[in-house]
Amino acid sequence: MFDGPLNHSIIGRAQDKGIIETDVHNLRKWTHDKHQVTDDYPYGGGSGMVMKAEPFFEAVDELREKNKGAKVVLMTPQGEPFCDAKARKLAKLPGLIILCGRYEGVDERVRLIADMEISIGDYVLTGGELPAMVLIDAVARLNPGVVKEAESTAKDSHAENLLEHPHYTRPPEFMGKKVPDVLLSGDHGKIEKWRREQSIIRTAERRPDLITRANLTNSEKELARRVTEKNHD
Ligand code: JAH
Image 1 (cartoon, rainbow, N blue to C red):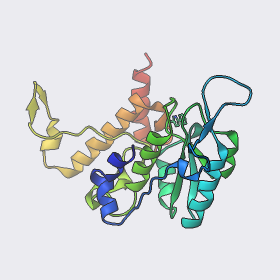
Image 2: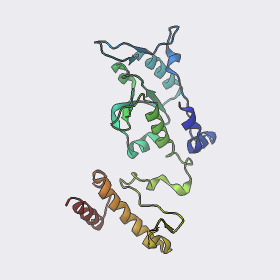
Image 3: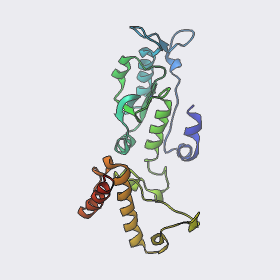
Image 4: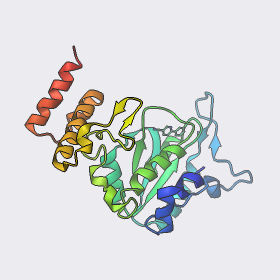
């Protein structure tokens, strides 16, 4: 399940270059029974299975020993919502040990060995593997040299709590829709001003929850307010 995404494209290249390294572990390795069982019936009854605590404990003991300073993250819909700021904090750490549950959930005592619990959004999946890969991708690309220098991550959408401005490439007219004249003007001052305005307008329209956290000048706040008011009548 991890093989495709982690060895593909930018993340794959970052691993080839030795900038980041990922290892995938099968929890069954830390079982002791013939059938390598990692789940069991829930105490108190009910449908579905629960992941056993012991294999997680033994796995984390071993992986903490081999990855000094790494933090243990449990992927769960009950965790702290993942965001750009969190990704930047995690990118500064020497390593991450990411625990992925399956079935209805993991034994509550697994929480005791996790340094943090992270959710990538308010929906339930069949397991924590896809969220883990989302986290890895978001954190990995913040390491110097993973994405091209020109594509600096400092101005990423969300790094400044703003959505990005619209992007256009050739042709200059498509299905009757023209590329805004300003982008063809060659006036980089005007282009930057237009992009900043578009960014603010879009964020105010689509994500009023973000705009309150963005660093805006007084006139930019005024622009955001005009957009919000227009959308309320
Ligand atoms: C589902 C264990 N926030 C996304 C997310 C994270 C984890 C899980 N689902 C959604 C999950 C089943 C078992 C974890």
